[in-house]
Image (cartoon, rainbow, N blue to C red; front, side):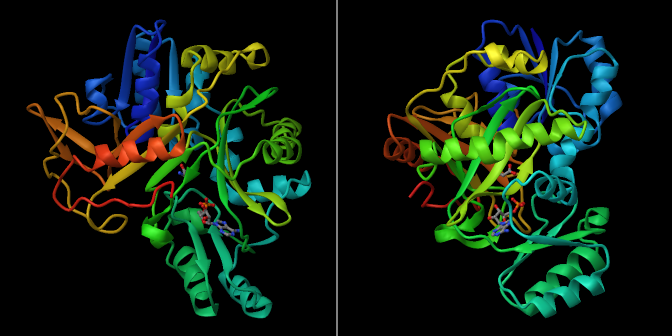
Length: 419
Ligand code: AMP
Ligand code: GLY
């Protein structure tokens, strides 16, 4: 198989390295990729958002399967365009990807099909949103931009002034453009968060091992929300009993709901869950693999990844064997000083070998550039240092031992991933 992976972050690096393990894969391309990915795949200078460019390249190279990883091209219909050109693609169509790209759609779906989630209201007028929040006086209040917002479209407001500020930046200042034309105002949920990613062909749903993200920038869950500063798998809060409950009250009903709406979902469906006192509830759906969840989930997959993704694309997941390692995996993200706000790039990274790797861990490159045999920082999240262990303690300590040997100007990371 010749596979083209779309995207260029740590998650895409994890996908590329997993595909590379398969004896069925002869060539891997990545558009656009990054410095670290270039040591494992042939990077091509096509933007992840360039749908005609990707279709043309896939046709020219006779690509067997395109793996569309990020949210934006999925929402914009890259899979639809590839299918139309007769090219196999892993990922949902634009209509199915709306489960992520419109929070108003996702909330409406859950309400209609009685899938547990936070109570909410939708507003397209900031004045009405203000008035609702003032009258309701329930804090914290959660305010979400309807559309995609680089994972930053959620404001957890502790009081009225924060809530009003949240509505203002999303709806008046249009910080996320048209994504903020509507907002969802919803109840604040409490409990441990769990990420469950699942393979689905629209008929069968097969959850992967669970994961836990660490979204805040600093130790102890302090500081601003980020794309994710580290992950562990499995998530210790996600017991077999809770998994069974989620299957019955959330996973199967969601697949069924999407079919009834005429939006069958094929690909990876990501359930962001909160384990509340009243049972598990959906915080959000993503129409794709998570970042950095993928970095700890795929290393635990024992079955040939190409077999699994092909059975998703061909609608025969029901008969596909999927085996997971019984151990654990941890990923510590090394970030640029200042991330998730302003940061500088272009600093040399020390401690990696010529392939951007090191002994004792796998280093997934999120934002790096490769020049003349050296690696330089090129993003906010730079590396995801990942290790497997027979249990969580071992995986975490191996990841930190490796992370401690890497250095670049301004580098910081959390010391409490998995703690
Ligand atoms: P989202 O982009 O929807 O995943 O939201 C980002 C983060 O905000 C989530 O991972 C949660 O930590 C938090 N969050 C979102 N919705 C809620 C909610 N209703 N209650 C509490 N926390 C929430
Ligand atoms: N790690 C959260 C996400 O990928 O959306």
